[in-house]
Each structure stands twice: as C-alpha cells, then as structure tokens.
Length: 63
Image 1: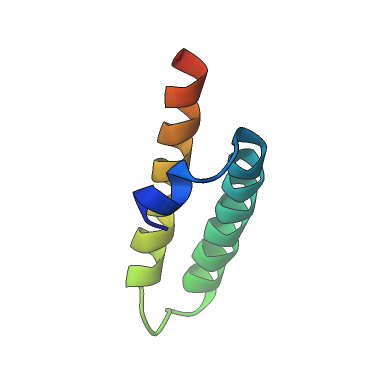
Image 2: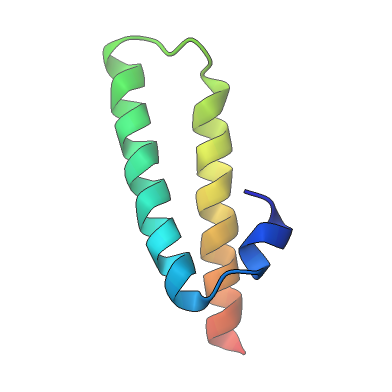
C-alpha cells in the first residue's frame, strides 16, 4: 500500500487493515519456512506495508 492510500482510510479501517496484513505476513512467512517462495520479496513488501499502517495509526494517536 502506498502512503497516500493509507492516509485516506479512517482509523477503524486502518486497524482492520493492520490485522489482516499481519495475518497475511504470518501465513506467508510460515509458507516460506515450509517451502521457499517463488518471490521472497513479497515478505519484504508485506512487512513494509505493516510498518506504514502502524506508523500512521501511531501518528494519529499522538495528534
């Protein structure tokens, strides 16, 4: 997800998105442990998306 897309979401939507992204990351990581992924860059992209959403949530909490 891009930062501009994240800023357009409400706080509740961000929390739901964060939960789904974390679950996707965990599932993909487990799948990679069992048998190597064809494109392991997916892990990095998901991890960065989780960080972007978490950062936006933190920023909104501090305001």
